[in-house]
Length: 210
Image (cartoon, rainbow, N blue to C red):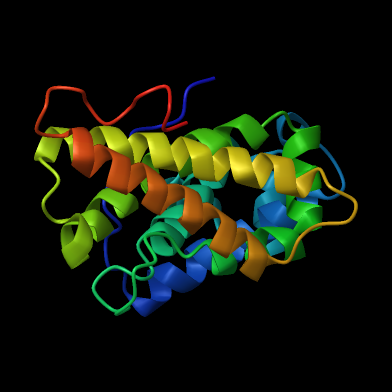
């Protein structure tokens, strides 16, 4: 299955937002009981107390509803510190890992429905964009050429998701704060290496960087 194209989040009025939130919450509850392919639109409607016409005004299927919810969450978290945090963090790793760690039931539901890969695919694209935005904001990274910045943003997004995949598999996990520090140590080593090679044609992704 392919995930849908990522689009910028539209501002929704209160009534529409409430409807979408109720539908998303209903689907998540049902996914704790059965797989996504077993859940019907009618079951979601019954759980949410929403009409069929209201559902189809926003979504084409339960799969579309699931992807839309993941898409909105990931866009928010991936850009959460852009333009607001005066630090050299490029990703809100602490907040992201803490949220995922507290949502074990959601992750388990995605695994049962074979949709965890969709979450990771969407996350990779959103975090690549968020990282690119942050690299433009942070003075120490602004000198990176555009192409180098985009390549590095995608590489670091992949590294972030690799960190997360490792982390959620551990019985005894480092704290989300520790993972934040570890990721940013790696990220800034990669950024500095990219800066040092940007002008000599070496590119930002060398074997010694990763």
